[in-house]
Amino acid sequence: MSDQFEAAMAAGERLFHTVEYGDLAELREIFTDGAMVWHNTDEKLVDVETTIANLEKIRAGASVFHYTEIKREPTPSGFVQQHTLLIEMPDGRHMRDLACCICRVENGRIAHMDAYHDSAVVNGMAHRSEAG
Image 1 (tube, rainbow, N blue to C red):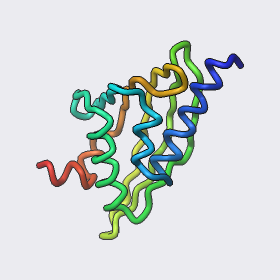
Image 2: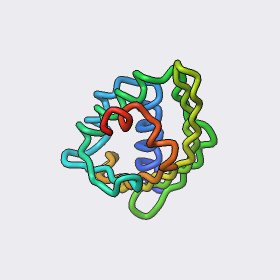
Image 3: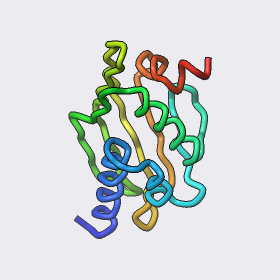
Image 4: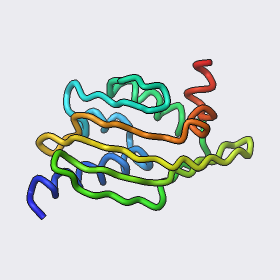
């Protein structure tokens, strides 16, 4: 595997480990300056600060937030990852988000992400229920 592919795979590992277990402020270092994240569920691009705020709301509202069935492969410009995100809420709701993320990596940092989520699951998450 080339250094470029190794750097992309390492960026993916760092990203999803940080989202699941880490200090979400570290995402500012994992993404490049000006990086954007697109979601199929609303077809909008959001910046890293918005991504951090949304993830903080989701994790704060969940008693379980765990990635499983992770499949990550390098691409010519970064990596693609398929995974299942398991979320359990204190009120007993369980969510199972089958997702795919396509990331462009530059110099070991994520410059852009296209995130495809199960819209039925995403609409039940804390950050969406408050937005109306």
